[in-house]
Length: 99
Length: 382
Image 1 (spheres, rainbow over the protein chains, first blue to last red):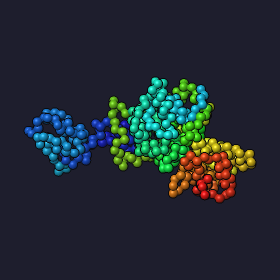
Image 2: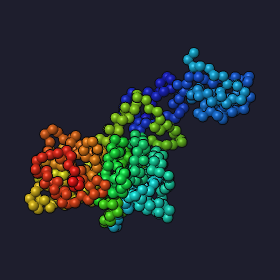
Image 3: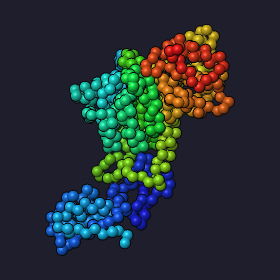
Image 4: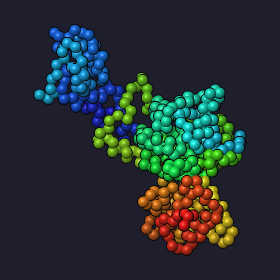
């Protein structure tokens, strides 16, 4: 299996014979971005963030990497808003996608 | 080595001979003794396999799916309601192209609560991508399971197989079964080495979201796999004959060469039908039997070739598709050209009702009367 990777990182297969027999991804999740349907994005406001890492802990994806401050991985964040709701310091803003 | 074994023990010993690595199953009559003996062999350290205990048939097949996806040869067994409970994962196994082998002891679906033979349980799994074999005797159970792994694991096939044996008529009846010897079986069935498997060094998503861009092609590939399987079944069945002395095909034609009437059937009824054909031939009726071994892939070529030569044929089903007719009858009908033989569909033996030699003789004789009917119920109370 030699997948053709489109510019946006998704896999393009033109011929049936190039598909695997079973529905299995051509590569790891590194090449399978899963955030295209996000409608809002969390934005961590550095000034209010206390680095408690609760957002990292509650993210179900997990799409938040611990750091100073933590970083949202927008290739995988689905915009569920759990981090925004759980942040005790209101340090994560919600921003609409596609504005 | 030859042993006197029930069909269930023949199935269990076939799993042992195939060197299965993972077994997961849940007990249900009349299948229970298959996994009972396997769990005993694992517990005694005589079978190098993991036996995963679970709380239901759904979980049993789920465990097998995970193990097979990780590259293990797996085995499970069930019957009737247990197979129905597996249904969601039966589809999953077929579409995931995992060559799991499942010994299904054909048992009638409840209610009324029944533990007796009826193929409706397996026929209900027709459209799941699995191959389906129906066995006539215990030797065929043993041989079919070995061949099911070999065929299912072949490149271009990669399909699971339901190996069916009739409740009690095979599952709990003892016959002489040749178990061959381990070295020859190992040479016939090398270890399972899938090209793609669950592997932390090469992480992939299995069975993930598949858009309309690709789902259609995956379905097309399953059909192609069944077409490749038909070829593989024929080749492997011949090779098995060379190695072990018993050849198999998609079907078995018994005394059909010069037959004027042929009964198409499957499972243990095929054995009884052969006796009926022999008896009628002694009375001058040229009777033959076409045993369907594989329901999927359906042996269309064999059916057309053999039935094309006869005046009248009948299909005996120990199963029924309510609102239509016998499932093997409708399948047989569907592949015959319009000018094919007059075809009658017989329903017999549901829920373990005995189908006697006399019953089958009467069906053969009915074919000669030249009044074909799609649905004849044999022996129903007036």
